[in-house]
Length: 115
Image 1 (spheres, rainbow, N blue to C red):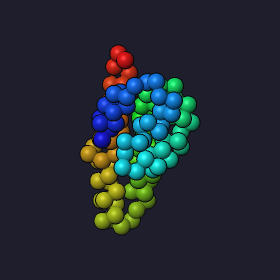
Image 2: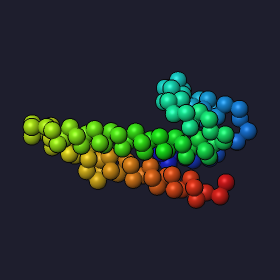
Image 3: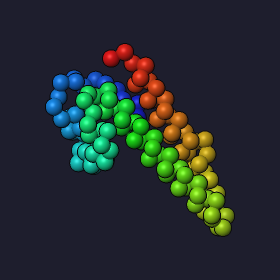
């Protein structure tokens, strides 16, 4: 999904006045998209699509890291084996670690793009 978001952001013209509305209007539920993106002041103040994309991905990295830390704390405190195993599964390389890594790759690709 992140890759498609990056492609979409990159394909839009950079002359639109309200970048967040332009990005979110292509989604099935634009209001949820707008609400999510407007939580971060750096996204709101983005002057162009590339900056908006970078700030949105940074926001996603931050939220994912917070979630991972919360789950990690829950797993360490859990005394119920089934729950502990499920939480640890979320923390595996195919869980939050994978998500955060992919967001970081997308952020790097945005920076490497010449436009």
